[in-house]
Image (tube, rainbow, N blue to C red; front, side):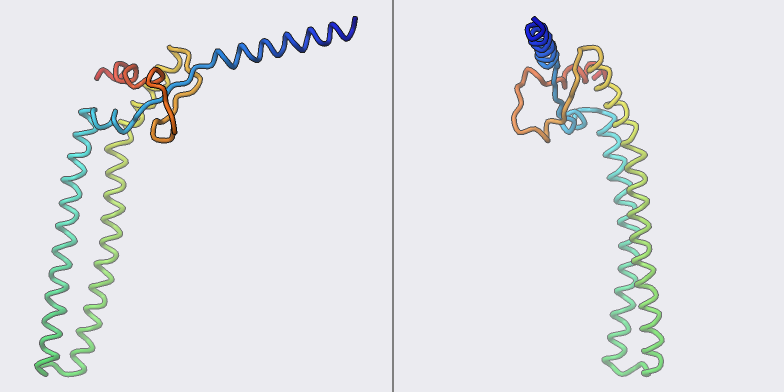
Length: 168
């Protein structure tokens, strides 16, 4: 009789576990496609492109001036119109300029990354908030990114629900 009770108890537990596993809902979202459709994301991308062009122009101006000075020094050396002492001094100045340009490039890269984060992070936060809200409202235990999945059933795509939540 005790064995029967134990076996019954174990079968009941397995049944509950099986029902619980079957009750889990999974969904996926294509966040890249969602971002491509969002007007705020498009505007942020346009702002980033403008900022990047400004930074690129800044560095190109410095690079052009550096290359011009380098060419002038090379020409003076070839023509013999500069002494060895002056050539060495000018070469040191050029080296310092080159290091300044490298430091400027690094600083501009940092500035761009900071701007990118400040432009896009609020959008990402809104998307994540919408995904969490859709998951809670519709009983999803997991919502995955489509890009990381090998196979998906279109019926588990929650992108439309998230778009609705974002008022798109």
